[in-house]
Length: 171
Length: 300
Image (cartoon, rainbow over all chains, first blue to last red; front, side, top):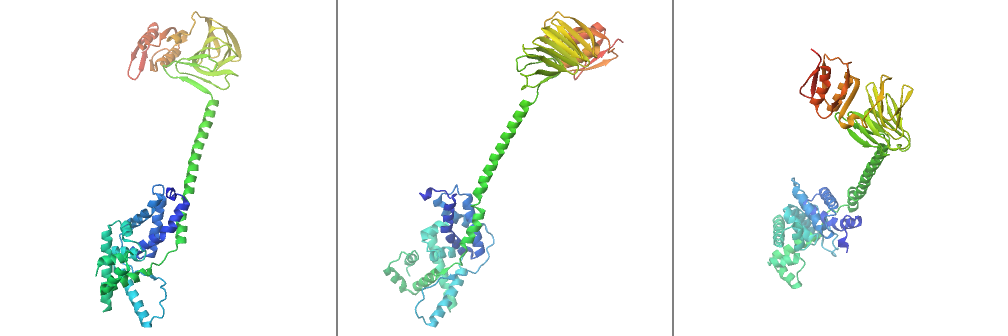
């Protein structure tokens, strides 16, 4: 029933924003690693959604937003190399770990962060959509408008290059 | 290492046993660690509420803009309607006028069904609204009236006023010549503070404020209604003026005595014939040039 409601209705629009904006934001952030740019793009995407509210059915809103962001990203010519900084999730405090183990873990996370930043944009986006956003391959394929096979490939490549980088630095 | 199992793990579709198989290899364990650790990361968050505020300034406030715009466009139509209505009322309260151009005759019916036939280059002005209260019109030029019976009917000209009660009459008010012909009923002519009653079948010519002729007529209509202009002992200049009006032409006079008098008529339908009838009795000659320019020559 709510699917019939138009996005032009303020309550519907607000609900869509509340539900979808974090995922959209993360998606852009995975791509560019720039907080300000990600926020801008989220805003732009939602403005576009509003402008086209009569043309976009509510169920299509999500893919509309992803497509707009994807296109906006493609249109941006200057890709500067940005260092991703991932805030750590509050890990369930593992009881009484040895200080050395904790230190090693910290070291590993730091290296992993760098390695993630060094992935190609395509690999990183797919990999983080899966790992952080918890999206299945099928969903990622939909968002990026590629085949599931291609997602698989990017995932494997991402893992492989992360492993290689972590191992080389360990030596 | 089985890559299919790895994808199963990443897709959260792996079974306990399969996971064990995956953990058997060194590479598998490394992959699992990377995958698991990455899942613990997150993006630096963003201020959703602030973004929404920004956004609603740019978007949700828009419907108001749209509705205001709609209201504005309604205002536009309302203003147009008001303007049209005011215009309509203004125009209807204005005097109506009927004008005939050069070489044109026009018949018009007044609100009380009185009939007016305008000779060439003439104009009447009257008020439609007050017509039933006061039958007054002003005339420039020449017109023939068939007045419906009723209240006093006034024709105002700058040379005098003609008042009647249901009749047929012709009024000519051109240059300084004021000529009234009454065909039916009784006409009262007022000019220069004098007044004169003109019974049916009579004609009066007033030139420069003086009565110059008053005589009986034998016809029932003014001749111009039948496409002919008739003159009786009229200044030649006035004859030429009438010719110009009826044919929309320019007339050039060369050594012609303007003040000589002409008695006769000319037709409105054929310029050559009209020129002949005017010039021959006075022993004049004429040529018709380009651009409707007629030259009349006096005795050489």
